[in-house]
Length: 329
Image 1: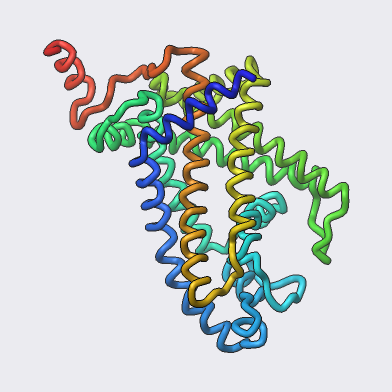
Image 2 (image 1 turned 120 degrees about the horizontal axis):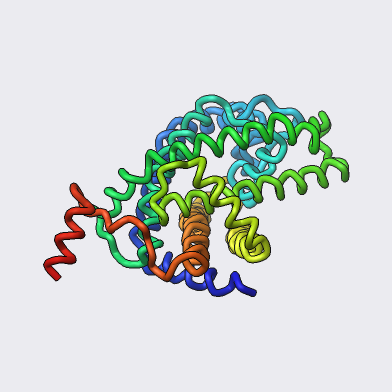
């Protein structure tokens, strides 16, 4: 299995860069805290108005949650553990495959997080590609160099996903039934569409890697290069992607087993908080593992280990500073 070596190497690269994971956790908390504080008052008011469906049963009112996230309730159930319990890990995936979108306020928050993550991902990939400390100056210099390019790549990816949801999704999956049931044909369509999304995401992943590692300036060229890399090594690329997906599924499954009920008190509340924080960090580590393993596999195929086309960025004049450093050494 050719993907096992880059999977192990990618895991080691993530573990050797703990500050990347810590920074990702800080970014996530900074984006999630303001909407969490805004939703807290609304949730408490909903529980006070409907004690039978809220505080007495330990559930969050479904109609309130759907109104806050996507819209009015469609099935009339009194409460839903999906808002904060074990099912939370899979709610977003189901909504995406069903073609549902969040309300504008939450969509704006998600968009802000996506932009911030994209800008920082240039420094993350550069750090994993070099596989050695670049310090904060080098990291943020790499973010400044590659961030705008990766934003252009993200726009291309967004256009591609929009076209998929506007055309292929409607043809393969169709409109969801009003009663919330999912016929076998619909399930097969969701699986097929999910595999298509994974393939497109895989191409853009390697486009992102090649844009940073090879210091590419044309993002259309990076997309074509990513497609060529996946087309010539389909088994290994898909195997590595599936292995990363299994790691992510294991993290989500572990959380589903360990997650307490949606509303807890006393010691259970602290246990719920600890489990939730561990889950967030594990999810972020799984996301970073995708970057690290794909960088590792790309370098093992088209470059020697640790290769990056651009010199290590050192603020403010990265190329000049590194050239002087080599001459001095």
